[in-house]
Length: 166
Image (cartoon, helix red, strand yellow):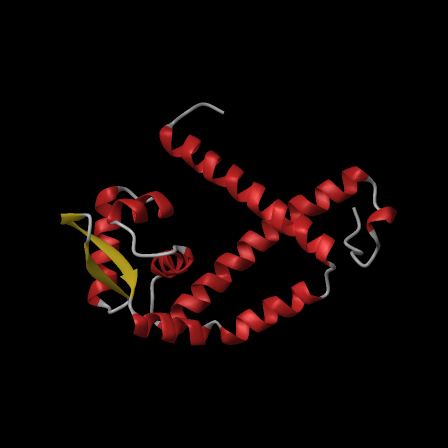
């Protein structure tokens, strides 16, 4: 199959389009892993910490360490060590759970939110520029695909880590 991507969708067979999507998805995942490593290095974090920061940034409020384990796929012990490391680094803060005094919640520290947000300024503009070239209906398809593919990824990660057969 050719990699002459400037062709329009009407010029590709369905099999060619599906193969292109698989290839580009694999390339995207590999390149995003490299980007995540570079971003983590630039702000002085481990890539797993960087992913946790991104996940915490999407949450509407503080979360428990158990929630972090669920969001990251880590065991509860590994999530606790992750939170301990991030508290020590000043990336997250523990807060008392207003509903359960025996438990604490975790939130990004304001300084980390500012510092990491600033590091995202240039990449965010670059990724945004790519999206600007798409119509609203194309953006809706992209958003739908990413949402559905993420659901499949989470389900497959759960299947693989639980030992369920394929």
